[in-house]
Each structure stands twice: as structure tokens, then as C-alpha cells.
Image (spheres, rainbow, N blue to C red):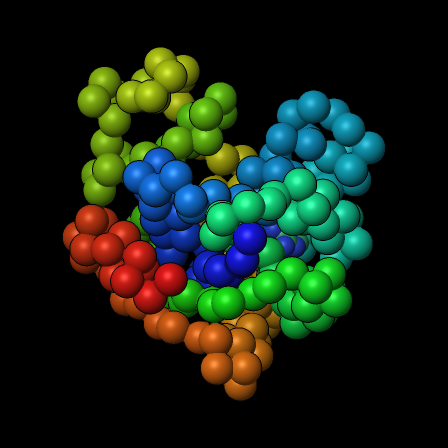
Length: 210
Ligand code: AMP
């Protein structure tokens, strides 16, 4: 097992690209820290109850809380698999925790998207609460409006996708997550892929640098 980290602002397309790649390639596995946390919130676990307030406010949950979840997923993943890690690490301290786990990070791919584009994207974002498939009302609409193509569930809008919280999440991204670009560049692991334009082309460009 090896790990490739997906870097990029909220709404840069990390989940969409990783989801598409994992569905098309058996050896690729998409792991989203946000999905792990939303799952814990939905189940009402102790970790979920602790995380909820931070998530609703667009803030990062405590490092130890999310690191424990990621450690479990890393420990249970074996064999000839590349894990596409989406949303973790979110700051340099988490990158150090990941390195201490002994997890073999073989690359970090930055999906490069300007903040102005992010607002428009997140405003139209719709998510399937059941199978986690992501859609966009304009850029990636489901076949039937409001319904997941894959499992037929009613699509929802994430609670933290409102404009005020998005602003806060972008501030957190620039202050805490962006330093990871330099962190992985210094370790010769960084690849940058433009995150705008045709989705299939973006997916192909990410695959090419994995
Ligand atoms: P995401 O789906 O990646 O946009 O994550 C949604 C929310 O979950 C974030 O705004 C944070 O509150 C929380 N979260 C996800 N990943 C992490 C992480 N690695 N560290 C801290 N908080 C996280």
C-alpha cells in the first residue's frame, strides 16, 4: 500500500476526482477525512459528537481526533493499493503525524483552483448522503434533478457549504493547509494539476502524475 495525498482548497474537486479514479481503477482507494467525520457525526459516536461543532463552523477538528480515524484506515489497508487521501493532512502537524505512522507517502497532488471559482462551485454542490457521490447543479448534474444516479437517494446540500462558512473554510485553508504545498515540495513529492476545465481531462491529468 502507498499513499498519495490530494491537496487543494475546499471545492477544488479532490473528492470528485478521487471518487472517479477509484471507481475506474481497482487498485485505487479513495479515503476522505470529511466523509469519515460526517459518518461519525451521522452515527452519533463520541468522536462525531466532538467533531460536529468544529465542522459546522468551518474549523478544523482537533488533530488527534481525525488522526485516530486515519490511523485505523491506514492499518486496515494492505496489498497492492494506492490510497488517495483526500482532506488529510490539513496542516503541517498532521503531515508529521502521518509521517510518524510510517505510512509510505509517494506523492502529493495539488488541484489548483482560484478562490473566485471555489465560491461558484460550492454554491452548486449537491451530495448523496448515502453513497457519498458528488454532483453540481451546472457542471455535473444528476440525470434526474435532486436524485443520486447511483443509488436513487435524495441529494442534499452540506451544512457547511453556505457562503459564510465557505469563507471561513477558505481562510482556514490559506492559513493552515496551504503551508503543506511547501512541505511536500521540499520533499520532492509535489505535483500540481490545474483543477479547472473539463472534468475527464482533470481526472486523466491526476492519473498521469500518480
Ligand atoms: P471536507 O469534506 O474535507 O471539506 O471536510 C469537512 C470538514 O471536516 C472540515 O471543514 C473540517 O471541519 C473537518 N475536517 C476534515 N478533514 C479534516 C482534517 N484532516 N483535520 C481537521 N478537520 C478536518
